[in-house]
Length: 255
Image 1: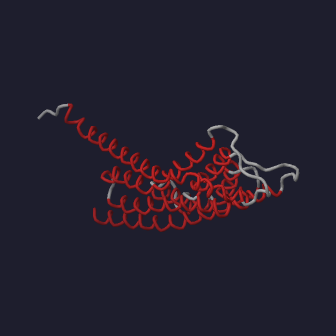
Image 2: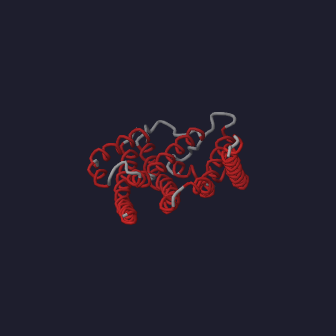
Image 3: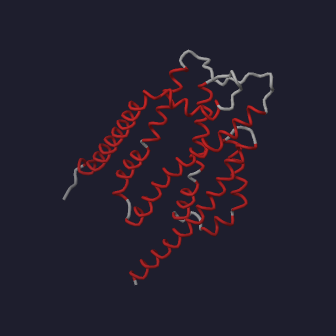
């Protein structure tokens, strides 16, 4: 029996069509959320700027040095918030696309990892907003010269806080990365624990590159990264034991 080229290409075409449809759904939900939030764009920006504004000297305000900044800065922030709020739906679409190609034990591992990744990213951003921002902005403004008027440009402020949001959000994904490395067999939990001194130094080096050049924000990023690494090793041990148990059961079944 001969197989025509069209028969081989059909599954690939179907996968591409499904991928396109899911991408369109993602874009649609982001646009719907963005449309609902856009009316509150200025309020969202005011909420984001609150950690800085409360430390500004009396009479100082944030400024816009470009003509389009009063519109574009809240617009960009609202779009960013829309993507964040759509993250569970986006991950659901990604999961629905890749799940058919996974084994059952991989599905059992992937589901909690996907859910945890969203929660950890949100937690990292919340930690940055409620803990890091007040300490960093208070330090910057209090240590500045008294004869310098502090009036931050709204676009530059937005770029600064988005950088920190991403830095802390990604840093809080360390437990997920640790578990995946252990589960993939790249390293064992004991091997990961033995590299603890290098990990600690690496956390502070990353904190130096991902945060402003001050010891406070660097430490506030490095220490949580270290703690999250330890949490990843702990959960990795659990996943590793389950993996060994499953492999032993499979070996016994083949005997």
